[in-house]
Length: 233
Image 1: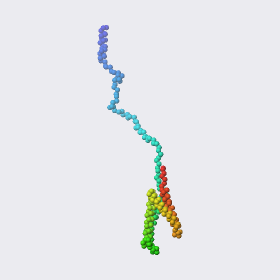
Image 2: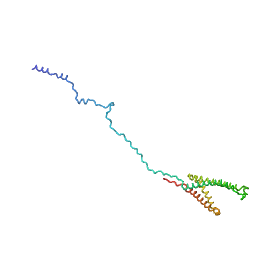
Image 3: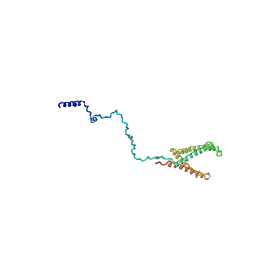
Image 4: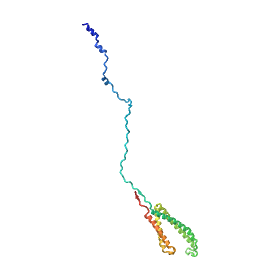
């Protein structure tokens, strides 16, 4: 029995040899998971293929002006204009100027020539003129009167043009001419009553009154009704 035991011991492998030849132990799964390094994103990591979510652009807010306090609109002042009465006075002055210039030229040219050629022999020579021919004297006086009428009518013409152009200087000239002529026609109407009726005093008096009334109208229109009143809108 002593011989079998050693044989059995010889057939059994040595425990130290087994421990030396056995493969090394591998780490478990838990140890491997804990020992693996955690991947990190670096600057060189390429971007993902998925596009970023769409975000609409910002909408600008409308600019609202600050409230303005209400103010009343500015009043528009309508300028004063020349009245129709003054315009009618200007037309009368213009017509009187044209007719007066024509009348003065007619008296100066035609009247002076006709009167100077008249026969004044039956009247004799005027002793105060030093024996001068009365026809020449009368003709010269007629020409002078015609020139005076033409020059005075020129003032009518200038006043009428100034009034129609709403000129204040034309208005003043028209008032002066109207007053002077009105006094002349007033004297003519007064003296017409002293002339015998057979010589046409009635017609001369009526014509003087009409001319006086026209000049009174001219003066009144230019003094009191020159322009309209200013109005605000």
